[in-house]
Image 1: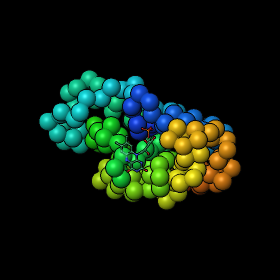
Image 2: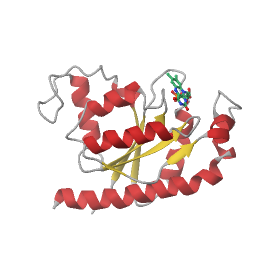
Image 3: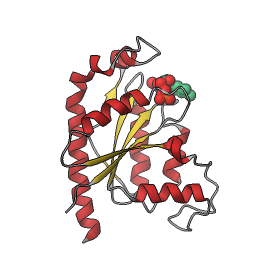
Image 4: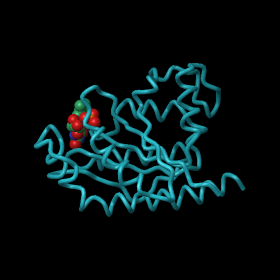
Length: 194
Ligand SMILES: Cc1cc2nc3c(=O)[nH]c(=O)nc-3n(C[C@H](O)[C@H](O)[C@H](O)COP(=O)(O)O)c2cc1C
């Protein structure tokens, strides 16, 4: 079987977002894996409207061409890793909207997260896992939490340092996340095609 295709989805879209920094750091690590084919997917490129379909595409095909283009992109992948900003203890509105704009395409595939913020987006990631269950995804155990002193060391809200200053002790959790995603992506891919 071919290598699983994994999307790393940037969940913040605001012009001055911090998200690009952890996303680039994580892509560098993920790109070294020879068991996964990893692609960065930026919500900004899809310009999704707020959900305005008659129903989820679990029930009725979507009409808006931008929603359909998003669904076609999501359908390409066997698993997903979200780059998660925490906005008022949950995921961004942009990410929730993007999750709602597909359904069929998410089913029976693993999802994981790289979060950042005061507590490494732990609260947002727990919400994300719950959303994933409703979308019939497989939320994995391991996640990367860039929190506390690490977050302020690299965020413009703090010292705005390089990711390399905090990378070494985050790499084991990045490996754990990628191992989980690889295992579940292979298992669910085989099960979906059986
Ligand atoms: C609307 C809003 C709500 C926020 N709420 C939280 C929060 O609940 N917890 C937290 O740790 N940081 C919170 N922050 C700070 C973010 O962690 C910080 O701004 C981060 O850079 C946001 O990610 P982004 O720059 O990629 O959008 C919030 C920021 C915004 C803009």
